[in-house]
Length: 165
Image (tube, rainbow, N blue to C red; front, side, top):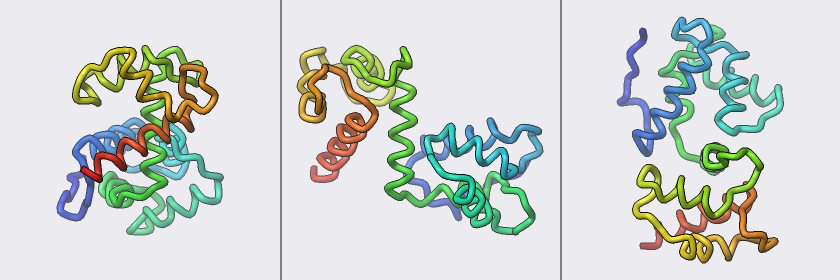
């Protein structure tokens, strides 16, 4: 098993490293410590990136630092490391899919309350009324639930307000 040189990886959180390390291992189908183009394509889809085949091939070539046709965990983490808007959006989409426990494509007040403020991802438990008030400004159709785009708005606005603090 390869050792990751963490000094070259600029990750913002340990959670982020864990997500991408797990994805790498999950999609290294033959567990040889290297990801192929096909395995990388699957990983992108699961992580929420929506790329066409040409973009996936380009990204894979850029990630393959030693140009040997496969990507090691170290190359994968180094490539995924720098924060960018696209990666943040993909992460939020992945979280949306995790929270959408009934897989209907929407987050209800109950799903958000259970998941976001369970202590796992949030800081404190909120009442249903508090969650509804939080959702209201981004619930464009006022149906009491959030689609993925509305959830993106909610999370991004929360991230922006926490940066202002």
